Length: 204
Image (cartoon, rainbow, N blue to C red):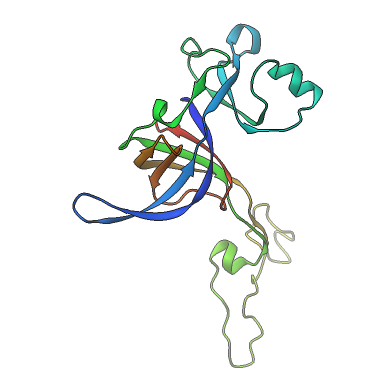
């Protein structure tokens, strides 16, 4: 794994390339991240860098004990790395430190929730006939025979909760980096709704 940054989804827009081609991009706001803790193999059993961002007015006692003299960060996430030698607690990482135009990045976020959804939207089932007395329009159909197996197989596709899951979109190209406004523009769509939390790391 590689180091990344914590950010939020601003929205979607478009940019023009040098040859005049229009490209749809997602705008990600990534404020400077502070290194709040280093995980080592000797102490924790793995190596990782813990980053924090955004401001929290009031911290709980455990948060105060962990952060001590560091900024009062509201959001904390860990990134697994091979070595923590290049990082130190209190260090600040920004978009210009990690990303440049042309880089490929993996973006992780929570997808939009769609609530309880039928099989047509959730699993791309075909609908039933609409005429000749049929009442089988959007129903799932048979979910198993009565004699054998006499039960419903595990994993049978049915209606149910859709979305609101962690999703990673891989190898999105960074089109532009704006260090003054702490923005990066990546080609294509990223998971989640506007203002959703995102983890952005360099692709393998």
